[in-house]
Amino acid sequence: QSVLTQPPSVSAAPGQRISISCSGSTSNIGNNFVSWYQQPPGAAPKLLIYDNNKRPSGIPDRFSGSKSGTSATLGITGLQTGDEADYYCGTWDNSLNIGVFGGGTKLTVL
Amino acid sequence: QVTLRESGPALVKPTETLTLTCTFSGFSLITSGVCVSWIRQPPGKALEWLARIDWDDDKYYSPSLRTRLSISKDPYRNQVVLRMTNMNPVDTATYYCARTTDSYDSGGSYRSWFDPWGQGTLVTVSS
Image (cartoon, rainbow over all chains, first blue to last red; front, side):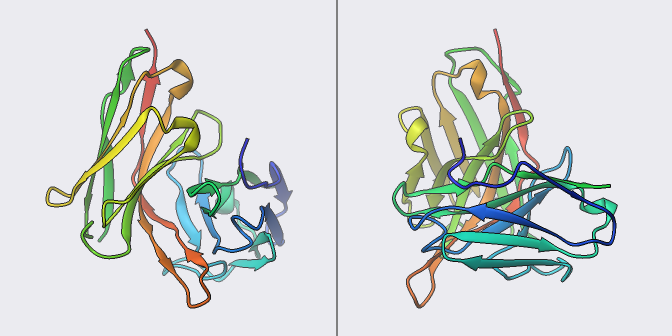
């Protein structure tokens, strides 16, 4: 059972916009920065968003992140078939003193 | 260019001890704020954070696995080693290491993310 809660799956047509939620608590998301990771099938995870809403070099601006209170959201616009992957949110938990992840969300581009 | 690579046995028997090595390049584990974490992923399941070692040798472990895990570093050989005792078939997973940041913003919020990740190594526990 993951500390952070994500929807198991989301789907949309090419070109559309989706958002993926990540819910936590004051001991993690509420007081720390959130990062997001993209994991295509059979590949290692890759950093997509850090510090709630910053994109590493090379990540297109179709990907965005936001945080409010104890929840965070990943947004993807202009969906492409290449965006099909599992997406994970992550942060640090101050009570457990460990890194924590969400359970992952599988994105299907129909 | 920052890279990490995991190495270790692909198959271990139940009750054995697993030793995994993360060999990295492009950064130093002596630099303030730099850490290396281990994360695993059972087949078809979610990511699970395991352990982290910091530049100043602070160590953190998953509470559920604390008694079985040990993490160490050799910063001069650019390696981090994870040991997990008493392996069980439920420990079958792909094990990743990742460079990890460690800092606070001016408001006291903790900043930490994993980038980049190694390619991962699949460890199967079976007799």
